[in-house]
Length: 79
Image (cartoon, rainbow, N blue to C red):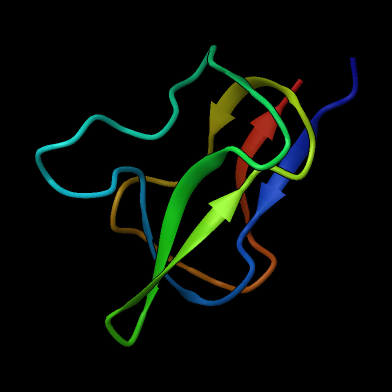
């Protein structure tokens, strides 16, 4: 099956969880549907949800929590 990716909509800092005490939004092997939140991008203390545009199974998370990311950078691979 072809790999699909979820990309960063903007440059900023990627977060895999809503706050330090919470579980991650998604993990490898999780099923996602269109509109599911997979992470957050922080830009100047504002947080923007990163949502899946397509459904699938998460095969790989390509960035770590709190990594800086660029606009259009691949964040998550789906199969």
